[in-house]
Amino acid sequence: MVEYPVIHYRPIGVIHSAHLEQGKTPIQPVFAQDCNGIVELFPEYETGLSDLEGFSHLILIYHFHRAPAVHLRVKPFLLDVEKGLFATRAPGRPNPIGLSIVKLDRREGCLLHISGVDTLDGTPLLDIKPYVSRFDCKAGVRCGWQEDVNDETAQRLGRRRGV
Image (cartoon, rainbow, N blue to C red; front, side, top):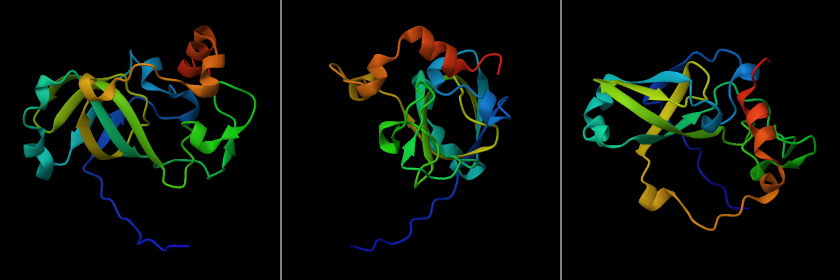
């Protein structure tokens, strides 16, 4: 087996949200449209935010700082049967990296006011990329086992209301 070097990342900021408990946090941004938050970029990276205001949505890449243990078979939130980890978006991963597409509401210096936030408060931010429909939206997509779950069930389980 090839041995690879250890890779180190340092956060470039922090994602702030009202979500304090994993079990009550919406599971994907689509279920968190009414959830607002703030990305606080560290001051040394503020220049990198230039020209970002022209984009309506951002891709946030972050570290799951409170991820559960890694299991290669997991029960996704939409089903009560196990699936392979890499066929899910479960946070307990060998490299606990998360990704969310959020709406950029406005920028104030190093602060990005966002909506559609599905991350826990204090989540370490690794990177920001603009969402570009020309590159990021794909036609003719297959969604595997998720196609067997109806929208009503996905909405109910994904929003975690009343939990």
